[in-house]
Length: 307
Ligand SMILES: Nc1ncnc2c1ncn2[C@@H]1O[C@H](COP(=O)(O)OP(=O)(O)O)[C@@H](O)[C@H]1O
Ligand SMILES: [Mg+2]
Image (cartoon, rainbow, N blue to C red; front, side):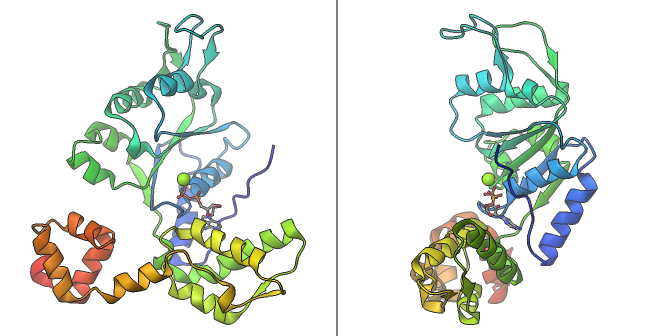
């Protein structure tokens, strides 16, 4: 089996706090909730947490909750008895049982249907599972980590996420900020990604200071995953040893400059009016997160709009 690299790179306050958090909670059995945009390193943090814990020699089972049909999800997670449904020719333990004493990582928990949320809630409250088609309950000893890129509080308000489940899983939570809020990590990350590329391709590559500068100016909507893609692409497309500014091809560069150039206080106000002062909607309208939107309002001192 391929050993996954769980090194967490970065020297920003956010990364240092993340590492400290992981160290502190690794050996507790508490549920942990990891929040953050796509590509910020939630998976990585979950794996690191497992590795830092005394469960490291036990299984780490990752389950993506998004877009799984209900029946499949139940069969996979809880297992089934022989003959429980057509095709169940043999009994099968679910992933929750397989993870015995290890860590269960339920990714994209915010995308789980309300029906499955109820099942998951019961399972983490009782720490027991019942295989499909069986009546006996089996104890599970695994530790749970959850992750989502959604604002769960908003989902609760919208009625899309159960409040009781939210309280259950959010006792110990931490948020990984987007890369654009910790750009000082970019040079370190680039070096790390380049080292990996070089060891895989055996071709020496370096990056010029101007190329780094260009990266530092960009917002990386896809966060670290996007940075990885950009560097990998640059490695392939650069003939020489040195990756220069022009070798860096950014995915949403034009869109990003277009968007920032048209945002003025007047434009913000107009958008808010159009969205009947619903800030979440207005933020979406101009392609910003709620936080970014608030920051713009603060920047222009539009206090009357913030309330
Ligand atoms: N701090 C970090 N140091 C090194 N690599 C990172 C870091 N954060 C994220 N990555 C890498 O970026 C990619 C995306 O991270 P991932 O954990 O899959 O994000 P998410 O689950 O939040 O979408 C992965 O290849 C991961 O290894
Ligand atoms: Mg992920």
